[in-house]
Image (cartoon, rainbow, N blue to C red; front, side, top):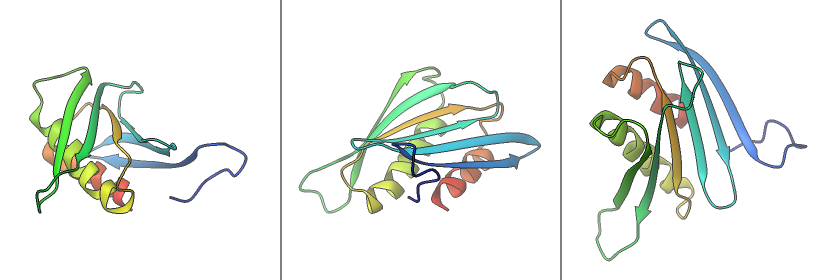
Length: 120
């Protein structure tokens, strides 16, 4: 990840876009021990999830995702965290993901656009 500000100690990137008529702000921060992704349409943190890649003998990677705070009955949020940790672990294998989603719209289209914006 490219650092926006060399004077700021944490490498970060900001993305602003409109998704289905909702202004969406995304901030991605790379700390020494984890990646933080905040995506908001409501100006607040929303649901916070923790995702990490499980190391094991399996050929296929497995991921652990848990809701730390917020909506526990939204399977699409867990799927989004799983998709993001899958992408992130291919670039930075040992860093877990903290994901904050404060969204007005939890549709699959919105979540796919957020994943695409983070992947860029």
